[in-house]
Length: 195
Length: 216
Image: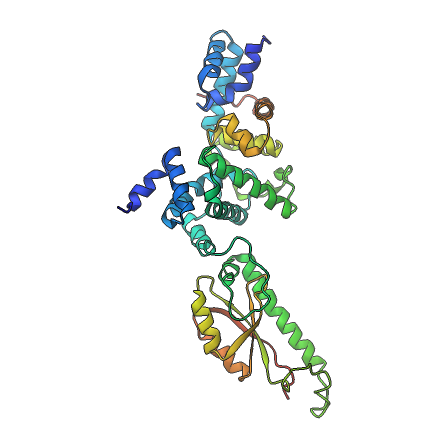
């Protein structure tokens, strides 16, 4: 019996369900692909905003990533979680896109000047701490930012992050250690007295 | 304190904070926290950082982005170069699907380029209509009766419909698609009429005459 749309949508809620969706995508199931797309679009958008603030470029990288998922679904062997696989594709595509554009991936802080999102009233509305963290992160090297983001905003394990960033797990631990020490300095006095 | 247990805890605290640390690693870090005030403070700060959340992501419309991607699903992963532009090849819908600002800007730039070429041709035209207009005719050219057109289509247009439009307009594909997804057509009909027929098609987003070689 054919699965209903609700059945398919529910698959996106668990890692095992996502793996099942990728299997269906490999068989050419467009509804499964659209379900996976809708599940990953917001996650990848949030992830990529640390690498570029350009909304059109973010959409381009997200679509490029999920087009690769559509085309390479048959190669997914289940040795990692679907999320690790998809984020790894997105990370590589984003690095390639930024290099192709000759965008300085380590110096994105300058691009932020004059952005609407940096105006004081916006900062206030969105939460001063969130913005302070965001601004502090923007001063860090890209690799540290990405490791931080995958840890705290995507709740990934350090082996998963190592897979995505294609580096040893000790490198991830070291990056995170330096990241949080640096953030502690940059956010001096703003972290201790909060719940 | 700088024991191996403290060092391990310092490295692993972020993953204790995000709840992904498991097994003996989690047990060891939690045991260390019982005796290390510095690590407890660090963990508290990490919880605060995590709770702050990321800055809002750019506002992007997932459904619109998905609609832009779907036409590409049927395209082959790597398109070979098109040696013979007619009949239409399966990849052209993909190339036309780049319906974004850059695409539109390039289409407009192409239009201006065509206008510039026309202006140049006009400026360099011989003063006398009796001048030797056949002097630079290429082999196979038929007395300059053909006109070149540039056409772009709505990215959602089915391939069969694109073929029908080209044929119904009395034109044929002689080049393209360009990197912007534009196609070059030629017609032996009155070019203005062909352009009018093309523009009457809802799927045609741009139809312009590039030049009418040899017209008196």
